[in-house]
Amino acid sequence: MTSEGRHHRAGRTFSEYRTDRRRFLLRGMQLGGAVILGGPLLAACGSDSSASSGSDSKGFGELTLRLSWIKNVEFAGSYIADSRGYYTEEGFSKVTLIGGGPSATPMETDVVTKKALFAISAPDITGAAIAKGAALKIIGAQYQKNPFCVMSMAKAPITEPEDMYGKKIGVQASNEAIWAAFVKSAKIDESKITKVPVQFDPLPLTQGTVDGWFSFVTNEPNTLRLKGFEVETMLLADHGYPLVSEAYIVRQDTIDTKRDLVKAFLRAEIKGWKAGVDDPALGAKLAANTYGKGLGLTVAEQTLESKDQNSLISTADTKANGLFTITDKLIEENIATLKVGGLDITADELFDLSLLEEVYKENPTLI
Image: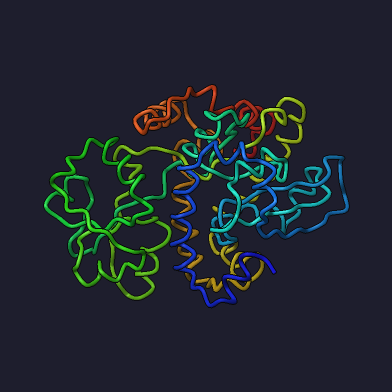
């Protein structure tokens, strides 16, 4: 039985998965490269996987992609690429999407130990691993904007950081590190804000116990909207916290020796995500009915989440330069933000966008 299946059969709700996700992300940031150096032992701990086979291989063999979380709509583009045969068209004989979750090993560990060719992670976690000696690179990012936000009720909206002054903001214990980094990066006077320890059910916000709620823009806001509440969201990315997210990572030796394979993977992902951006319901249906079947997902909620995440993926810059590209300015902002948080790493140490540049130069119709 998979780790996801065990949780579901134990009666876990989708909101509980979200709770564990924050803990999982925090664990990744705290352990960083230390977990990478634990390699073989940690690699023995499994996460769930599913595979689909193709018959028209051009020689790349099996593709293994480690997802950063459970199989919800967050990975819509990969589901579409798999179900429509884009991976097979690019030369992969078999596709294995390895699900993540609270009991899964860190994404970086799975790539370093070669359990997965690629993984989806984040600059702070991958950067910490590199600082500890992991030979990894970020080769692109799905989310051009960080998904964390401060949610408020529409009747008393928080749209600017200063709107939080004199108000109570609910922050979960596992999100403290991200909150602290945001406060420092945005130069917010925290003494003017009352931070209230909360769990992950946003009910206190609807009851007026707090005025703002720290969350993913794709998650809790949609939970409340489906219950009939009108809410407002303020993205951290718009106010001093520019870290990209859902970043593709790969080993440096894979880049060095299998460049064509990496580019083939990127082309398939681009095709899948272009379709997902064009039709938010497509990935939502695949998540709820196929890839995440049994997780308690609904097409309605997943479609809302898909629409919101597409706004993080498709920006003016990606429309001009192509999906997953990161501008030089945004890279500089990411490096500066990481430094504020205590991680001193250079852009060249963390990013290699040359493969993506080649993909779009060789295939301009993909933009």
